[in-house]
Each structure stands twice: as structure tokens, then as C-alpha cells.
Length: 387
Image (tube, rainbow, N blue to C red; front, side):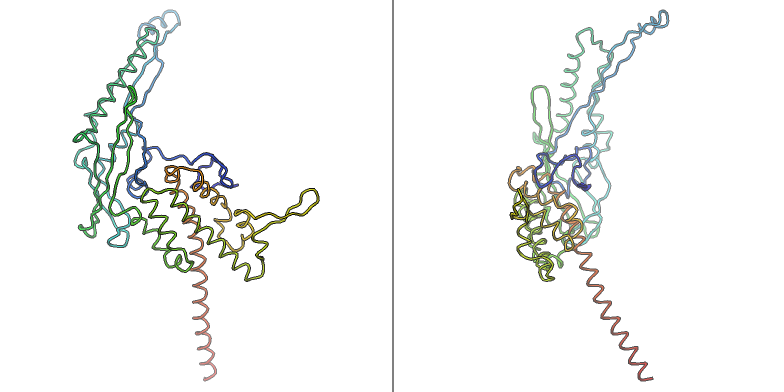
């Protein structure tokens, strides 16, 4: 089975029996595009605040001994620093670059400028307020190494936590403004939630609100397919799936995605049945033999897709197990797990829709070309007859 790029290749989802979810991105891998237009409401993204670097180095005394008798003792050196997640967060908050995405008011893609509470602060100004707390040249043998490690983490945790304090709350807003019309401003609300467990401080990055909704920004994806989806009869399912995901409803959004796949397959069957290539009993049941006796059972959904491979998009035929993932989400996974994998499933659905859309456009173009060419041919023949 070939696994598409939008599903974790190390996980087994065949017919929905896999127990693991696709791994989500680490915070330092997220861009503003991911955060504003892909991250669902109330999804928690953990930030690792600290990173520890350890190395073994010769001490100064042993270097002199080494020169004299070819022996060298070592000591452990430790550096505790701000993590890549923390550095990435501050870079994002200080970023002054533009975004290019869909403007719901203009109903087209435009360039946006955005502003955060830290946009006017140079990146280095923020970081000088949260210095690295380094512990170096601590001998493991002296018994103080772990104590210094613990103290250094406590100190840097205090500095990082203090950095995020703002009116005793850690809420902040990001405002983006359309460059085509400055009245088109959109706001995103975020929370940096601090949780302390013992000496460790964990920070979670959470989107807690936005206007317009994520569904409005997803409109750029549905606009292209809207007439086509209307013709197929499930435009409302696609819109509701996007809307539910935007509202933080994971399981409900999966219900509508599954209905889209079921509608696609059933419409393919009706076409195949009209062509007299597949009967209704063949579509619903499959024959098998056991102990020399022929029996029948209900045909599974992925088997229906294989049966109708000549009538369905290649993307769906190749990755028929996507239906199993969606079904598992509806019946077994939590709301949060469904929210986390929704973007990946959506990509798969959109690739399927894209193939259907392109095939529909090709057929439409062929018919238009045929009509126009026939008119030209008739006109030429008529002119030749009259000459």
C-alpha cells in the first residue's frame, strides 16, 4: 500500500484498524500561515522552553598531565539554553513580513500586513531580556552536577515565564490588514497558557478566537469547487465540514467528509449500473468460498471502491483506506484527535475533488470544442457547396 505524503508513512490505517494518529508538527515548524489559517480553535500546541547540551571535555589540569604522561581525565560540561520552540515563538511575534491569502471581504487572494503586540520590538530586544543561563565545567564526580542542572532550569524558567506575563494574563491578538482595502481587518486571539509541574514550566500555544471564522478563510478552497459540488449534490456537506472544524468540532466534521465519499462512490455505482457493467447485487455483496461452499457477504466500502475503480478518481482508488480513517475518527477517536488530523484528511478529499473537477472540466471542454468544430465544419461545407 502506498501512503500519500499527507499521511504519516509510519502509521497503519488500512481499513481504519490503526491505533496511532499522524504526528503533528512541533511548534518551531509552524508558520504564521499554519497558525492563522490551519490551526483549529482550542488546539493546544506545546512549547518546549529549554534545551540541554552536554559534552565531555578534558579539564585544564588533565591537559598538562596528558602532555607529560599521555593520560587525560575529563569533565562533563552542560549548557542549558532557550529551545528552538521559544526562539521560533519570539521570531514569529517580531515578524514584519506580509502574508498572501484569501480576503473574505474582497473574495479573492490578496496581500496582508499583520501586527502583533511585539511587532515594533526588534527580535534581539526581546531576547536580551531572557538570557541563557549556562552551567559549565561541572564535574560529575563532585556530586553538584544535577543540582546545578536543576537550578539552571529553574532560573531560566523564571525568566521565560516573566517574559510572557502581560496584565497577569497571557492573551494577545494578531491583526491582519488587507493591502487592497485597509478597512478589511481581521483579528486572531491567542493564549499562551503556562502550566507548572514541579520545577518544570510548560507553555501551550492556543488559538482561542478569530474573526472571520476559519470557515470563511477556507472559502478560497471551496469557491473553486462550489459549482461542481452543487452539481454533485453535496456542496452543503463540504461547507458544513469546514464550518464544524473551524468551530472546534472534530468528530462532527468527519461525519460530513464521510458522506462526501459515500456519495461519490454511490454516484459512481449508478453510472456503472447504467452502463450495465455492475449489478446492484454485485455492488452490495461479494462471493467467497469456504470448505468448497460458495457464500456471500456484504461488500466492504474499500472493496466497493476497488470494484468501481474505472468510475472513480485515481486518488480515491489508490488511497481507499481514507474512508477507514474517517470512520475510525467518528467511532473511536476523541474530538482533539479528529481536529488534529482533519487538515490531512481534508487534503486527501481536496485531491479527490481536484481530479473530479479536472475530469469534469475536460469533458466540458471536449463538448464545447465538439460543438464549435461541428459549426465550423458545417459552415465550411455550406460555403463550398455554394461556391
